[in-house]
Amino acid sequence: MLVVCYGIAKSGSTLAYELVRGVLMSAGHSQKKFAHHALKPRGRGNHMASVRPADLESLIEALGDERILAAKTHQCFEDADFRRMEELQHQRKLQVFTSYRDPRDMCLSLIDHGARSREAGRPGFSRVHDLSRAVEVIERAIPKFAKWSSLRGSLRLYFETVAFEPDAAIDVIEAGLGVVCDRKKAKRHAFEKAFTQRNKAQKTRHEEELSATEKEAMLDAFGPFIERVCRSKDDSWFGEFRSQMLAGSDSRQIRVL
Image (cartoon, rainbow, N blue to C red; front, top):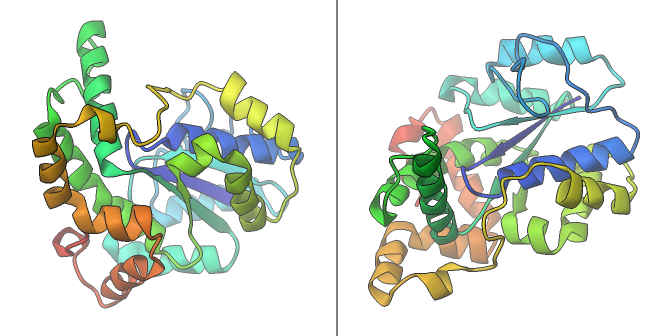
């Protein structure tokens, strides 16, 4: 089985991926680098080079029936491939985990990342100088998150659950993968051994760091997503998106916020 871990940038996606890896490793499934054209040859862990269904199917075949391999990505598949991705998941050849976070905290984390990138002379998010630019980045990412997350059978990992209630996250991961892990080892890997790009690792940092005017602007931008996805964990939000995808709508035109 191939396990694809998709996350919005600064949603705790690396931490979620490493927790999935930790669960699998402690359950006896090697997560060593795997050589395949669908995977990037460099970097920490296994990262997807392509998420085209044909490439995923080739990788799944190469893995065989016994191996379970987790791979991380920020890429998204084409709208036309939605049904095929669902088929792969229904057949238990693929399991998708998606990570997400309150958009207000993602925006603040993006600004921090941008400042560090500029100081180090690196390109990653270096153009994110302020809140308005961060909002643009997250607005573009949410439809991709919605596509991965609305595939029937996808499992979602909320940042604050993974970071602060990891046993609850492990419950979801174990059930989704059909494994039983050594929880101490899984958590030690994710929180002590792995590289996870932690920023401030704080809950609801927006409550202290945003002004009243900024808070109002963020609710204008992300209000429905914050209420339905982050607070209420409303599955119908994803069901509505899925219905539109199956109807052949263009994901770029679907109002998801």
